[in-house]
Length: 349
Image (tube, rainbow, N blue to C red; front, side, top):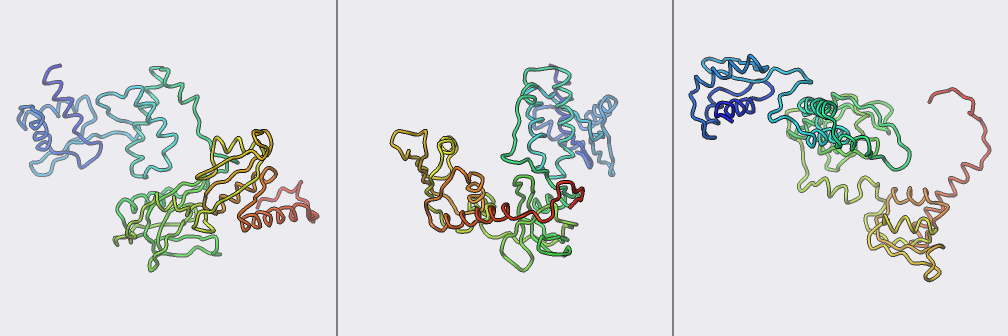
């Protein structure tokens, strides 16, 4: 490949997608660092010729020219072109990572997603079958995600990156009307169908979990956000904050479970240091005893209730009593007379 072709490819690669662009002088310096010997005037002539084939735009400020691409939202220039492996990677990212991508980056990624579609559809490959033969699904009922305001999401994603405070209007579940707050956004966590913003209210130091779909408006401020010393999102999650801990200390949970539950726990342990023993020695086809260490949380009680017919809590006594109370409440609710049947009702709540 000739030096001219290599130089043109490198020049096209250096030019950014949007204004204000890159100056001819900066292109010259970069090319010289890479071993190309060429004058600024020659670079300008080359770019003018390339602009006849590629969507290049030049803006002038005094004696300085700035070059950038003028592309539609679904258009992109890829040098080198995208291969099948890269196309599959982008499609998987589009399918599974979009909720985590900051709003301002989606604009830059959309052309790659479009190009990935073209590559996989225009040149069939065995890799394309991967998209049709793999799925990630949530455990339990597939609840629909509540609608979020895209403008609010964009404000928070930018504020988190820039560590800015925000003025928001938020409708808490405990309030009859939305209220205005000043907050410091710390991070975003997606848990099931709901996306949460972790934030600190102005004047406080405790971290709140705020459902993104309950924000009515948000505006970034120039004030720096208050970020607690040593705040670590992974550590915050590991501490069980999203499991709604009822006790921070791990407990030694002892259960009597059916053989089916025991087999499931053998493959997917419930907690640390889990031990499963057959009640009848060597007979794992009947009930088993399970012992493990884990935090006491509402997630634990949800798991126990979901296996209510196949699980008996032996200890701690507090967990056993709470579990029985929940079961009794459910039994009372479902055995009481139905005072106002709604089988044929068309009312929407």
